Length: 203
Ligand SMILES: [Zn+2]
Image (cartoon, rainbow, N blue to C red; front, side, top):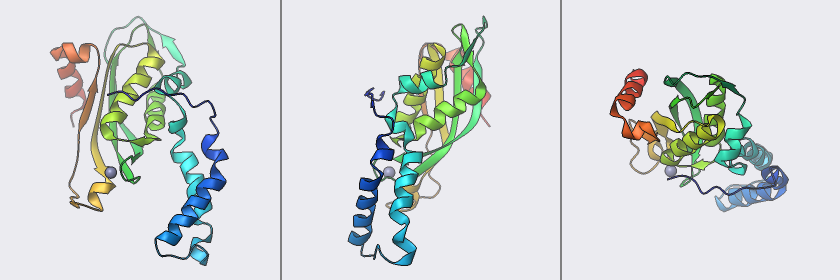
């Protein structure tokens, strides 16, 4: 399911909220039984608040806006499958606010336009800079790719993922590796195209 596209007009929101975020982290450290004034923790609230502004930057943009951000595209008249493999992403799970990370594989059929391959990596990383779920991340990337290229046929596979909320707590299963696929257009209806994509990204 696609994320509800809600535009946040203030793109500096997290930065402007830094003092409040710092205060929250300070409070949290105290509630966790530690002393926020001890030397090792003194700068922690500031560091964490600054880090959130960086690693949650994608929260402030819709998929459409992320697509437009990297939409420096080139006209082509090819309709051949384009595939980019092994894009590393780091995200934060929305249930526990701890990292999950893995590799993204993106395929699309150009609809008159292509974007630079590095832009697909940038789109992936921007969509990952949100409180996310793996399933939702794939859909977000696919929608941003559609917005950037005008393509209707897009496939995003996320695999080799590690969810630290699974490794560090609960079942503590370190071998956990979830694969998810977000398929649109002919990747849904044409088995041959889907097979071609899966064949290319298979290790
Ligand atoms: Zn989690």
